[in-house]
Length: 96
Image (cartoon, rainbow, N blue to C red; front, side, top):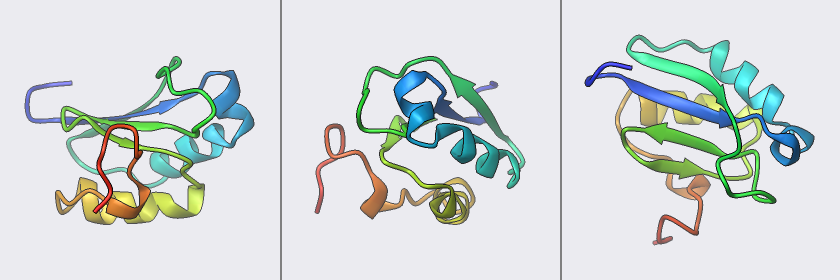
């Protein structure tokens, strides 16, 4: 990852995989965005709230993500720079 790139990390640890993280990762991989690296990660330390996704360097966390929701993150966050508020992980992002 270079300084100008984003990286989408999708937890692939046991609990997140049971909650559908493999399919979430596949959905991100099926919607490539120039300058955005997508990769499976080890545990992100938020077990039970998955599938967990972390967008770096933005430090934006998404929780309970479903494959059908990935397109919203790609369109709004990765392409337009606006995190999808309703999907943000409440532990790290205050809901407004």
